[in-house]
Image (cartoon, rainbow, N blue to C red):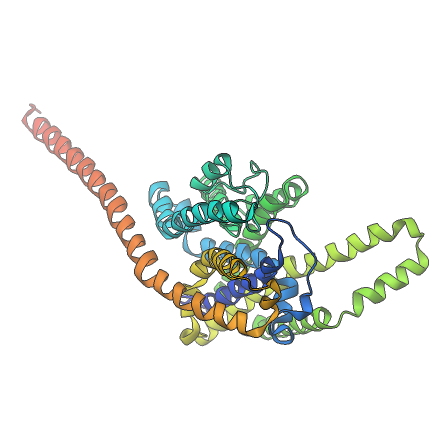
Length: 415
């Protein structure tokens, strides 16, 4: 039996929202910075740590999950259409630009002004240090993390969106030039691994994005050959085991410390630093290169089998972008206003601080999505794609008129 992809992967929408939430928890440490300088803080004292310890400790890896999920979705929605030239560069650009740019430019301008206000009152910026003209230009073109920057700038979390935009460009070129050839796909994975050495941020984007695309190819292959019922139990089982091991290891590390202790007792002391790096690198590789793509693959298979999964929770995915871009500006306002009015930064260790923060953030995201992002997206698509459609229609009419004239002229020629 051949299985077809559902019209929408609701479960992936939901998990995307959860990943965005993980980033917000990871960035809670921003409240303990001294200006733009990181200072040690009590991670385990942060609000609701016993519940969200996984997010607090590993939330930064959610960005790699975003990249892989984007790769899966984009290869699902666009790869064939781009390869067959049914979706052109302008249409693809407008679809992405209209979704990402309005909120990006709004938050960029807000942070630009707010950081100047913070600098005037405190003598330093909040968390992000590079808020100058050069980095402002990079931000305007969503190129703030393409390797040309000196460091994080303005709305800090936008760095991963900037990398995503670069991935969209690379993805379009690869699909257009090499169609859907597997060797080109594998070559991009290798390129990502190589680039990661010199430009870790861009390399992470290339590797995880095309890894997500490779997972989609595997998903499509399994569905097309009717293997879903046989593969699904193994995928679910492997995902469950890996997640269980990961959660246990984060909450109470034992395996890797045991490996380190054994290795240190055998290896010379000078190799201790290298061993520590190797252990951390292996842990991250397992999560990014195995656990994340396997989880996406499993959810896609389950939803294909059931028809839909998590439909009622999919709306969480609609708030992903707004929560990702709005939480840093809101942190800036919260921290500056409260500390300027005599509230100690230790207030943010309390659970009340988080409840109040989310009580503001979530409605703000809902308002942004419904009353700003969606209307702006609709307006830009109507304006830019309609004008393109009119241009194409004029070309077609002109071409048809020329053909009609030529046909008429030919009919009048003697045989």
